[in-house]
Length: 144
Image (cartoon, rainbow, N blue to C red; front, side):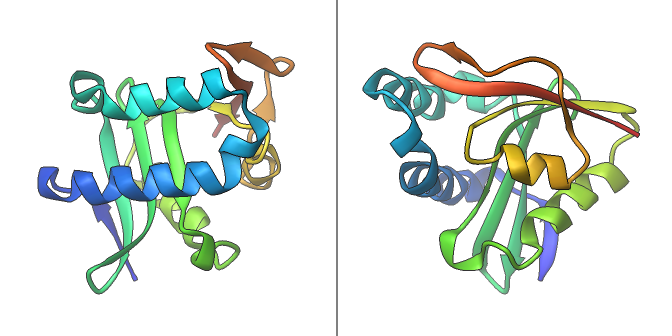
């Protein structure tokens, strides 16, 4: 498996993986407004263009995606295909980001589904669950 920064040509596949995985694992916890808000975020090409995308690939197959903003300080999207979850792919993506970033502190607005995953990676809650535009999240941070 290779972990690397994705090229612009690979972004459509990354966005498809994010959307499909979101629908399977996240959307059931969200109101219709939240699902629509997340889809609008993915469809906003100007916002997507500001993010850095990293991928876990097995040969040419994209297995997981980690997208960050704010100079690699904030995790915007972190998804692993259903069939490949619980195989350490997410951890490898996270460790790649840590190894390739000088930041001391990272933040994320975790979905309810992903809170235990972030806890395993060393993140701590910085507030209680919130809702914005129908999207449920818990603010979290990781400090080296």
